[in-house]
Length: 297
Image (tube, rainbow, N blue to C red; front, side, top):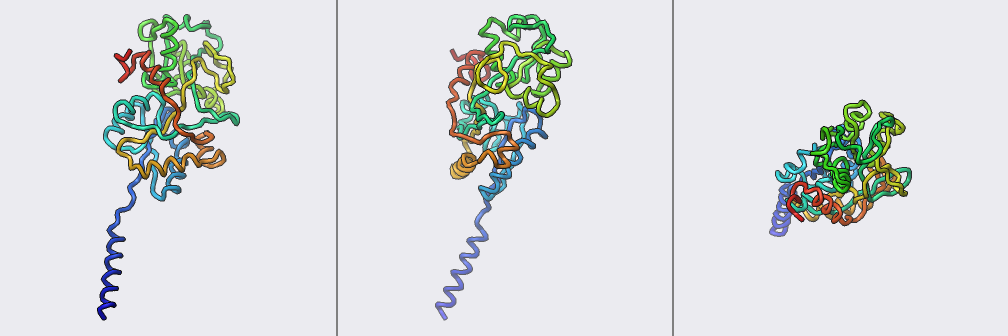
């Protein structure tokens, strides 16, 4: 009888412990929506689904505007951030975020771990050199856009041009697509976006590549037109508060992603790799004296 009562007690205790065990919390990945929230979800929604299946807990993609990246990290709204490389080095410096993987982009079967910025004009524009941009209306995405502003900013500065003081107007399109359309429609004389933007918009039928001409075009084997040097691709950064066990699971799942997986095809990437060296990005921000790198020599 005593044995039966004891067994019943143990069973109740085990059931109680199981019921009381907290469910795994949702994992939130903030993603810079450089072309708007709908396009962001179209590109990265499948990655959220893939990770949800691998982790056995909901992984939500949270599209973020440029100005929402830092507040989302500071408030603890997100556990991970996928944003441009410049945002990462600032988040690292300000909030202790850590790069845990770097995305590998895809173009015509090529695996690309770097990207650049492209400075461009309408095909019939009289602008032919960087020097010609002086006194003209120059549009970038936002000052906080690495591929869509800061890379070109460094290029211009190294060529003796400060877009803030030497251009007739230094304009902001807020989204990459807006900059491209503004140049085409004549709202500005020249613009800059990240490499692959023109090609992706052409693939989507929004523009034709022959409507534009690239300024300071770099001739190399990189498959996207670009005007600047190349920098390491976007990293996935883990916030300081992220559970180390969850971080390890996410990294393991991303490194296992195959090019044929739906998540990779929707994101138009080959997959993910170990985090690259982001020193060149810090150097760029120091040269243009941007954000938390202003005042550093």
